Image 1 (cartoon, rainbow, N blue to C red):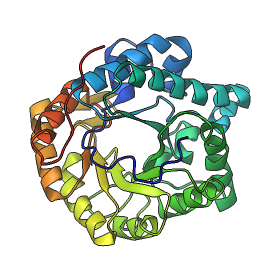
Image 2 (cartoon, helix red, strand yellow):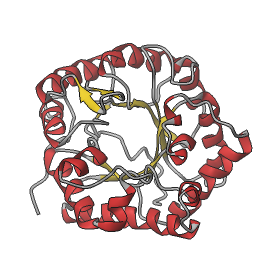
Image 3 (cartoon, rainbow, N blue to C red):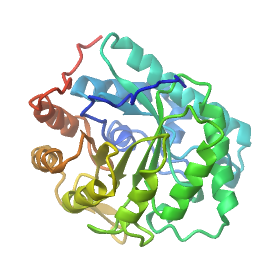
Image 4 (cartoon, helix red, strand yellow):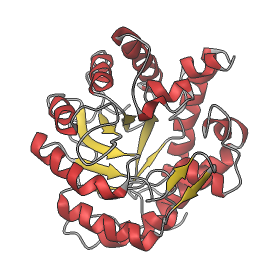
Length: 314
């Protein structure tokens, strides 16, 4: 991980969109317990095709396909934990190789790291009611940081954090690597509280005290709540704010289908309001695709000082 004295996100406006979503649209089977990590193991070329599509759409930061990768998660399904370590490294290598195709354009690679709940394969990250102690959370995050720290990843992206306690565990885990740069992004259940129930402002005030946190954000959350959540983040401190919500569609568990509209134009209209509300960086999470990011980037190019220009195709 590069030792950068300045915030590597400085001046960037556009994040990528749903990685697993685009893999699924391209025909990948992500129904297993490892979710998109299955594709990492089986068809890495498809992972790189998605990274490439997002950069071509205007993304200035791409996330690795490692959200669901952890020793604990691999053990849960009977795989050796060392295989998880190799998968983390491979995810970085795939993303970095694609990023390098677009040099000298500036594109960052963020290592996507899901919360403890992601390793349980049961959706626990959307409520944060874990049956574990604080030290378990610290060890869970620390073992992945140890694998990623020597790689060429630009920063660590701790995503879909459901609770203040897990943010505190991440902060404790990061202490071993004081040079590491990270963003912490929470999943929220409404316009005020994270999934576990704490006010987002309380969580953000804690993150604001962390020197290694270079940005704070919200992801995997309904677009309608984002303006109010940005306001809470602004009250908590002066860390750069990033938001990458879902498309606006909702999952109907009984019918096992998505409902509602995920129209890219509507998403771009929302994105304009998020930028105007104070978000420095905007991207997408579940059900967003390269076209959503292309529309976000088109608006971002009009923001003063933004370098959000889609790089030329390799």
